[in-house]
Length: 242
Image (cartoon, rainbow, N blue to C red):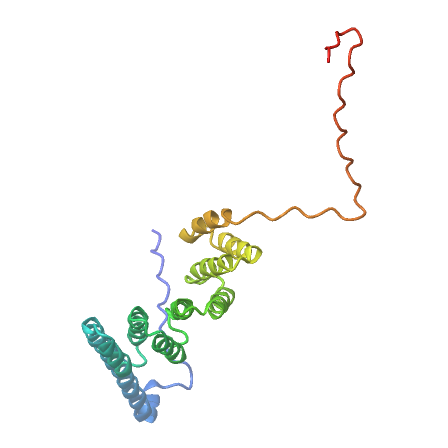
């Protein structure tokens, strides 16, 4: 009769030689408790900070929605500096000032916004608004420089197509058709799917085409076509009397 195979001996896990958890706990209990307490405090502080930030953001959104007049927007932007909504308020304030033809105040507000929040998501819109305000003031050259600066510094920005289009229109008005054509082409090549690209295509077609280059002095001259020769009179035809 065969004997049942014996099960292998169960191996027990034992602490590594020289390490006693109980001794380690007794020796470092105070440090472990201190680290655990700091961790709990840090997590609690982080949670409170996030809650407080969310509360302030909600309150700011409510206050921003209630701001209507330029004075209310200015007070909101001043009292909520550091929040993204403060920049939004400054942009809206500049728009209202421009609509009231307070161009210098609008530009000042926009430049303060850019100085305080240069990385704001709507910073390109502020640059575009400055250029638009300059153009409405009749400062075409300054506006043109501002449009070009925005288009070159923020090649793929959301405000760049509008900057190229408005720059091209100024150049076209000034009769600088070659430069206007370049601006239109930049817009079409960089933003072919933009709604502005179709405007650029149509407006570029209104510009007179480039004149053909004059032939150089060494180029062969094409001889003029021969003058037509009158047909010879037939001697047999009757001659009309005088």
